[in-house]
Image (cartoon, rainbow, N blue to C red; front, side, top):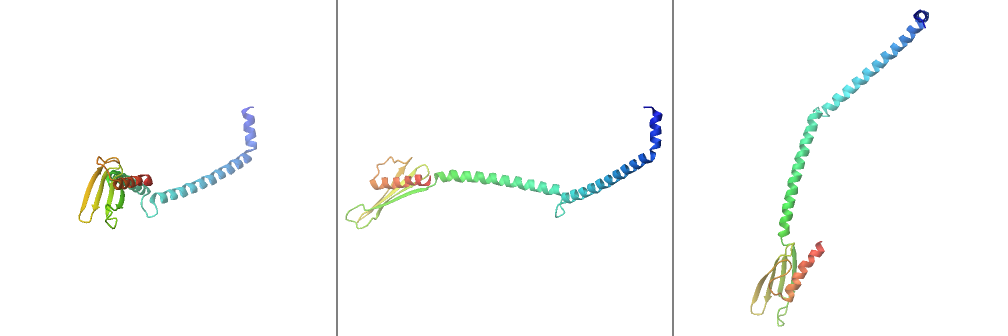
Length: 172
């Protein structure tokens, strides 16, 4: 096509071309106004979000929450260490007790004598035995390591020791 033909075609349809360009310009103007209104709305929402509900800055509020979270994490770590320390201490505390009352002598009317086993979680501790007679009473202490004693145990002392160690199975 020749340039003259294109020019003649454009001049013959100039009214139509101007009308189409006018409609396009009007559509672009409406689109621009619409976008401007949406951007303004988004700016207002952004400002509102960044200032928070009580007027404080969202950034400061988030930093405050982060600092609080760090403080809580440090406190949790301190509590965890304290729990571990207490747990280690409880391993050495007397947590298992076995008690057996018995009549040491036939001429005594009641179960006045007793054997008490006091053990920690590793079955270490002592057996306290008290034997009551008509005229006197005697008390004995026998050490226990890992559930056994280096001293010979009476049947009642062994029974108290077994009762205390039996609480291990009941606790676990």
